[in-house]
Length: 436
Image 1 (cartoon, rainbow, N blue to C red):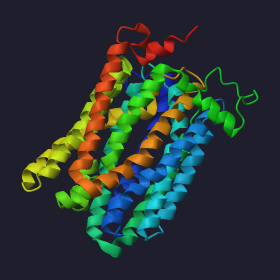
Image 2 (image 1 turned 135 degrees about the vertical axis):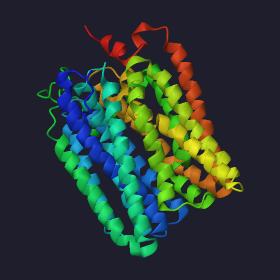
Image 3 (image 1 turned 90 degrees about the vertical axis):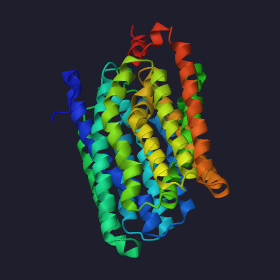
Image 4 (image 1 turned 180 degrees about the vertical axis):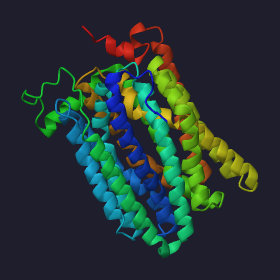
């Protein structure tokens, strides 16, 4: 089956193939890593609250990304993708030799830190190597295919863990899976390292760097805060990401305690079912991102995302009626899956282009967006852990739902604010407004 969209211009197809190969291998690695909190919980005996380590530690990468966004603005992007990627590989390999749950989860946090640190460079590469008119379609198609890999590898990983059994006897299987995860990511980095990046014309690398120091890089990265539209985008993104990350670390715990699920059941509801729905919906959401104002897409996506914790909160209250609790949980997971891929491509790959002027500002603005995500990653899981301990699962899920649904309404407000402005009708029209 040819995954290359027929509408994609010929000059963008080499990018699609290498980007796609990297994304598929990265998805296989991510699928194994997404099962590691359950491994820590069931095989290594980790305490529930320690599952927040991953997001809290990875938040540091978001703040580092602010500096990197300024530093790479007028530099070549591939080193800023490959070096964090290689450090992530080393962190995954280190995890494979650790059986202590605290150290294991700290290393997982470091791997996530390096994963988010490479995102500004990848976003910039995607922007310059795909035309604006087909960027959402290309990234949506790749994300849909990645969801198949993620779903398949995640399910296979959990089946193998269930086969080996709980407790310390599973250590050898954890080691084997993590060694595989690191090797797959290393292969993906090798493929994308051969990509020819079409740098922007205004990025003359023969010139002396405008911001050679960390202080200068940070100052350059902060320039995006001068723009009111982008400040509103950051504010609503903060509400959304904080609400989404408030509860997400504890979903395996809630599924284990409330529904009494094992490796396979937890994986089916946390990864497989949402990924299956993402396969069906992500390409369409990518096209929507190309053809409509991104605020409209965000309103839809955040509505679906917010219904997930809301329905799961109701399920947490209905555990006395197990079939009803399971039905509500499945409905919530379906809502999340239908919008999950769209959220990914808008947040990480194309949505920023509706606010950042073309050129060097892409990575600077992305650095600021990642700081917002970093704030959420640092504080939301910690607050979520406190709510979980004091109010229980339904309380932390309800709090997350309130924030995410609120961000959906605010996104809809911004769509109505911009809908009469021809320049802001789509990302493509916004970028064309900078053409001479």
